[in-house]
Length: 164
Image 1 (cartoon, helix red, strand yellow):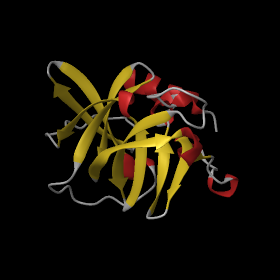
Image 2 (tube, rainbow, N blue to C red):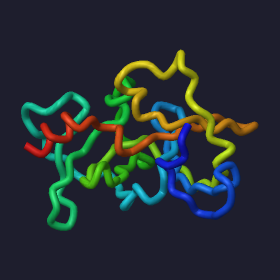
Image 3 (cartoon, rainbow, N blue to C red):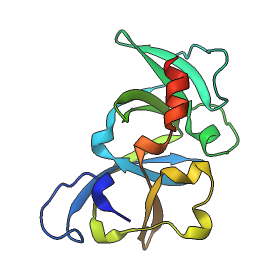
Image 4 (cartoon, one colour):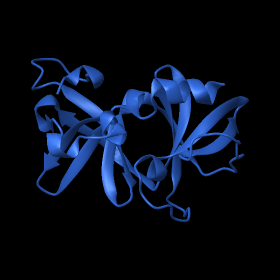
């Protein structure tokens, strides 16, 4: 896995470079995305439904005068929907230069990891559209963390359709 998709915090060889990830939970699994891709984390507001959008798009919100499309990470990953609760959040992220919101079950922490901790995802598990956004896996004694490339959560053609 190339660490170019991750933000470098420290200096030194690529194995010793530190990366900061915002960790979040979807469907009981823990994921991480580089901290500089996350613009803000907000509570669930009212979402306005939009017709003729992909099923994983929940709708749009007005965030300080800017219209932001909202994507359900559960639907994006093919997981069953659940009711929103007090832990449910929307992560506003920069996706290839556009602001998009992603509904997650909860946000955990900001985690610092070294480049040597990020391993490529196993090829048997890295098939399909949803897997294109997986940048790697971090294996720690107490947990596994899937690292997401924010720019690949939504494809270019899907972003074009949302902008129209």
